[in-house]
Length: 219
Image 1: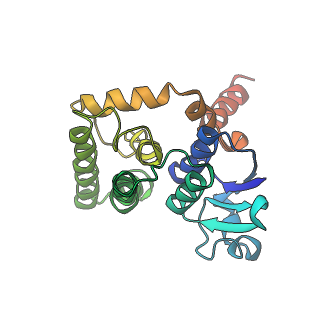
Image 2: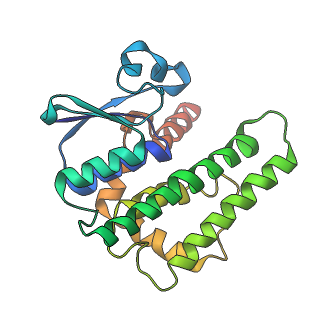
Image 3: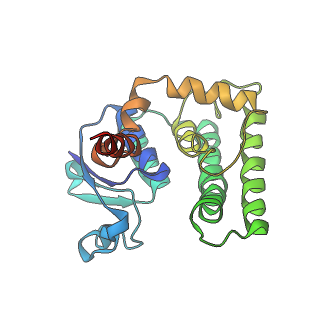
């Protein structure tokens, strides 16, 4: 069985949604990032970079894989799903996966830092990363104008980009003028496996934390 080390972040959801879509059995080992559990010696032995997600494949002599994109490729190849086997089809999917990993994720992540987390609001930095995030989401919108999904059939490329694009509000990026992106996001949201994957890890899911806080206030 696969063990998933994760937290409720876009990169974490890339792994959990992929596992759900592929129907693979897995157990969840949630890490509390605020407490630095991703920096413990035990976890660094799995991922030397000290980031989530990571997996251990118990069916393959406890083989450890880190980096969300690498995990997605490994799982897709393990099952023969969500990644074409022909050279061109595979390349198209990996291109859009790399687009997310090299562009969408880093730029939206930096937008989050400067827009949400930095105590000092540095407007040029906020503008820089929000504008670049919007540009990249516009690229997705353009690709989706004449395509149902990013690279042919639904694939790990769609999962990866979706898990970040869905957080646009948190980055302060408006997508009201990107109808193709919205149509695509709505279609992916409607998938049962996606809904399940977005709830992993359950005990650290933001919606449940917010609801618990509301209940405490009401008491």
